[in-house]
Picture (tube, rainbow, N blue to C red):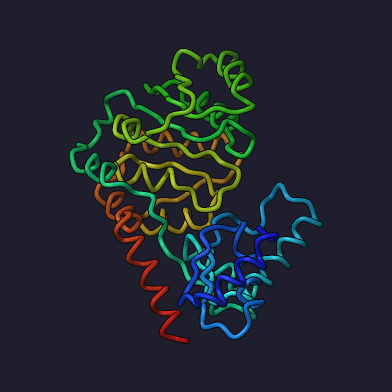
Length: 301
């Protein structure tokens, strides 16, 4: 993308668009630099932060570089959009020189099919076997080994688990499930293009990740009326769940995760608060909110 900066700068000088929307981390800085090179241009640069600035897996020098890079990006751009209010607050504190530029906007996670699925869902009977669901690449970040350890602590409850996804730890997961005596209760499906039917057929989505940005899967599950049990892997998700009276649990804590799953099995959460919260992430509302912010930054100019 950096090699295209001169061409983008020429395009901006020639066409002078009112605004350019950069939809991801990889293009944000390049577009902001191109706009500065273009000179006296009315064009506003709206940047979207789609992945966390910092992650637990980063080394010291990577953290220093990314902190500097994102700070420069925010300084050169006109508006920095985040996926949650929690992220906007965090970045405003991290970059006080650009604090006013950070605004949260809902991503278009929720499809009409997901909302329709939630409309016909009926409340779960706690006496019935619970259908658990986990979705995501089977890699260390997702905390699947913690999930298996948690499930081993609630074998006295009637449940089955479906896991959607593939990745480098798939065989380790299967071996661990066999060792724990869980393999007959877990179905490893692999990659699935359309997850909506699985949400509709499941009672509880379990997110056991060690870290996330602002994950789409829990929001999509909530839109269908599927309950969510999650680790404290995302400030934005924790904030959303708090709004509907739910807590997240500590990461890499099988006992805490097992208790949260057991509590949800024994006392199902109401469906409507889940669906009402997820509606904000519908495609229609997301587009409307993005357009409002674009209009706002152009009017300011």
